[in-house]
Length: 458
Ligand SMILES: NC(=O)c1ccc[n+]([C@@H]2O[C@H](COP(=O)([O-])OP(=O)(O)OC[C@H]3O[C@@H](n4cnc5c(N)ncnc54)[C@H](O)[C@@H]3O)[C@@H](O)[C@H]2O)c1
Ligand SMILES: [Zn+2]
Image (cartoon, rainbow, N blue to C red):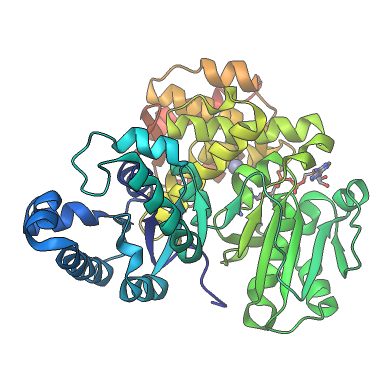
């Protein structure tokens, strides 16, 4: 592991002014990342009674002492989402402890919204607007300085916890080398004076031959960074080279396909194909940052966009929201944020939870294999989602309207064989109890085979 990325292996602390929504957002982020939620003010109240009384009877100084105690206790516990009181950052001890153990997100809200939310509450420091504004001015600097990053909502917090920026300019770490898909490079030439290594367009990039060439051509030391620009094929191979070169160097991702933006560039899985199959050699190696720049989508061929929409629909079904109906940038951001939340909950796929991202994919992989990889992944996923919804007894109209899946030519026996061999294929499938409620469950062989058969053209 070269270095820490975002909130992985750390607490995620929300800092910011009164009324920023730290409790509401914190609870949602904790829920999505499956981390415990610790609201520091509530912890203090549980132990010492209402904060307004502590202020009145024992004074602010004593409250700050109790706050330090509570924060130290929370930081000693398992990685959590922490919502901090607005004044907690005034303490140098707190700041030091947070810097050592937490990824800090400044939940940034404008003063008007904050005042509207807290006026009339019993918060001791929100009794009149003028003082409230003055306090905001003096504290702003602390939040901005201590925050690793800033966000406005739960999606923003989850994205920033993996350093994903949508829509995002990019702070490139120096020195760096670009690894880019040759087609993308021709369409989006680099203007800077920089070293650029190219990989073949699309899936062909994911080979050992490419990796060997890149190992040989790379001229960076352990402080160097690889900047990967392309779709999932490029980020998979460039990330894998980053994971292995000199036992691991940093990398940053600039996904240029819809699939890359909502899926492939997020979550630290890198890898290449071997003669035995797809993604059979790989490593977990998280990019230091992911910069999602929607202008790349302007040149994306229609069939690639359609393929990406299959992952968007998958994400919407898992999230229980019609994400596929949102305008493009919002849709991309929401899908990226959903995946980021699942990844944060199970970064190295040890808890089994990350498996939910395979909704529709067991059937998809079977169709891909059963067609000798002539069926595109996106088309296979659209059909796989259809099968998963049918087996779940859920309506299929969203998939049919958005993706228009058509049965494909594939060998049923070969597809069935591949399905049984698939690593999740021991009768275990991701289904939906209802949209937003995935379940990992077993399906009887007969039902699974019939569902598969229905996806294959007669
Ligand atoms: N690591 C993961 O978690 C993960 C998740 C999903 C998929 N993947 C992998 O991603 C790969 C698929 O990636 P993909 O669907 O992004 O496609 P891709 O990278 O294979 O690219 C598809 C085609 O689009 C072209 N292209 C890319 N960006 C373009 C742009 N902006 N304008 C015009 N053309 C452009 C490419 O040159 C290529 O011809 C698969 O190998 C899959 O296994 C990985
Ligand atoms: Zn997929």
